[in-house]
Length: 399
Image (tube, rainbow, N blue to C red; front, side):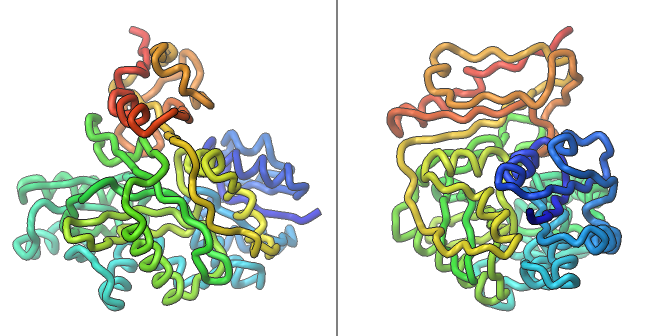
């Protein structure tokens, strides 16, 4: 029985904890939240922050672990690489993982290696950004350099908005830095989805059409994804080639990958983020439904140094979507109502809260009520219903 240390026991990480147990491994979870839901599915639990690299290393040494995983979370990815290098267990170069999980470092890497990249610069203070603001074409994005899930992210159209949005971004940065970059307009769908690198090669990828919470307080949370990707094959191959170039330059070997990519009107590929982890939401689940590939299992196998060479490219079949159920208002949760028209398409429905729980209006990426996985008979049916899904799924708030 191999011993695997899982960093984080949040609700979204339970799927990986359960999978590791199903595979016959001894699972240890550490998390700074003592009552996290994942701990009850583990063999052992320790209250340690997943970003405290030295503390996690000390724990890993004492437990004589065989592998370490931080499922779905950017924050623990550098810890995985740090601990793995120290203990000589499977992982990827620490410096490379830092580049992929820090927006400022990734933009610098892209510029130095001739990738398409928006004008971008990182700052430690509002004053620095104000002095430089005139050098940017509006609109611009303000982001903490080290956050994920759209936390602290804003789009601004004038310098009058800068003070408020920079203060907000710095609130969510552990290293007290933010990035300002020009906004890239989408040509076609925003490209999300997941992939997997084996021995430095992007052997599997499943690009999704990703949509955001544009009608909510925070318009940058990914709440919808659908398969198959709508871009023609030549553009998907172009995206694939750019991701492969990142893997080669950074000497990435074996890891799950999550994509955040835009294409402009000239068909230029902009790799906004390539995260060295599985994607959030229901990415892994809809990919498995559409392709039969279990990326969670490959993530665990890879962390334990097991052979993943059987993983091959498989195109998605059918028309699949996931939808993260969120609320526009805060209050006491009183259930959801799903229109009869949509019920025939539901494959899975999962709630993350209980009746009577207090829920918040969507402002950051982790304020989710639940999730739906849906299957459709045609592209037309999928697009029509997903365009109206906000009206087909209602979150009730008790007065």
